[in-house]
Image (cartoon, rainbow, N blue to C red):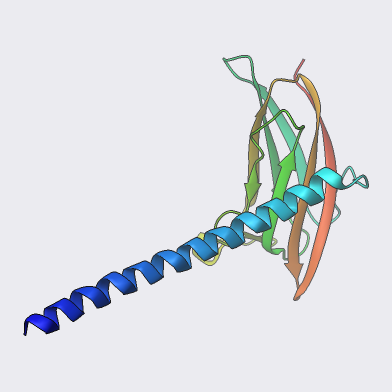
Length: 162
């Protein structure tokens, strides 16, 4: 009987360690995905100023601590946009590089005239960041799936908080 409890405890410990390893593997995969998107947005030079499939806009507000908050809002889809992943980049000085769909396992999708958060469909998505510059450019790289085809977009928006 004593051996049974020893084996049971060892089994539970080993099983718990395996779950931690699985979580570490998923975290590494998500972080690697984030790094890949970061590389793509910082190295690309071909940006558009708008997106035909949805509305993408920049909202800029001054904060009380002499910083500028910027919000990149992606909404009003013209088509179904599944599994959206996005990153927004201002400059190398900013350590705050907002993203969505990259560092979490949740899925974010947009569909015309449809919202169901339990299914992962939202009215819009938002990437928020901070900068100290009053005039700046936000580079956005995002991907989505439409009818099983992965689409990617590079968009640049101008911010002015002066």
